[in-house]
Image 1 (cartoon, rainbow, N blue to C red):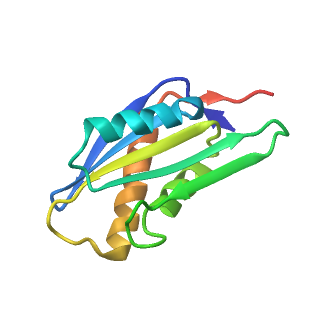
Image 2: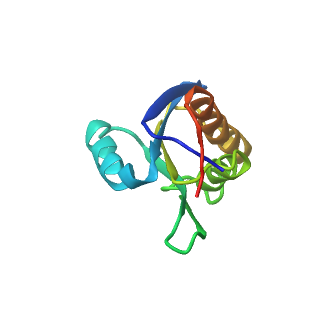
Length: 129
């Protein structure tokens, strides 16, 4: 299992839509989401996914599509975190709509690509109990 210690961000553009992915330690999730909503008042969606270990060493997972079609954004983002075996980490993707509809497959691809892109730029640490 791996985790991060600091905030990483990347931007992906697909058909004029912007996907700004923020990878953050889970304990900064709430305050970062609030800050991003204040910084990006014109953004259409704030898609989130996170995984963390609770006090019983169980992995707790959550994802939200935030108004995107069901299963097209939060779940694909969470699946990228699962595939990379990332814990104690959250990802928030800020989306600006570019005017062209991407369809359900296009949305799922764009969100998972955005998370993969930010993971590539992140410095990962191995989790030791």
